[in-house]
Length: 214
Image (tube, rainbow, N blue to C red):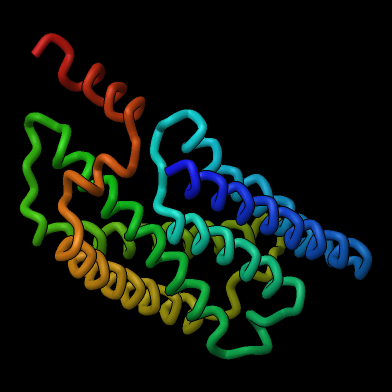
């Protein structure tokens, strides 16, 4: 786990460096929306590091690396207008983002199942919750894009067809993640997955809040 922690931190530093380059180029070219997006992604990149440090949850390295790459890809795509110039780029980033978010839900469902006394979910129900969450998150994101476009004139939504296409892509990303996580369960026992997450403090907080005095 220490090796994974070091690898994650190195990947984090590389991501910050790449995002700094994106922000510098964006400022130099006067693309302030792109620069702001890159700076926001720098702060977002710290989330897995902070969670690991405080022992809230330790994400698998592949998941953290996926997250870091996605942040850079999104910022780089905005800077070079890939979202407008490349037809499939928006679908790619949406699929990756929703797939990642659904995978996080998968891990949280395992923790809930292993440590909540009053909750027992059959593993075959995990895909259903993952897809429901993926669609809910996708709709929320589209609403947020619409609000930002209307209030501060950001170029986030191109058309109604674009929004519907994004939500269909979100559904596909959720289904792909759900299928992959079911296969994941075939190779690893839920107890092993739960232990590897090292979510000691998160579990203790949950148990104090919901199982106090039981």
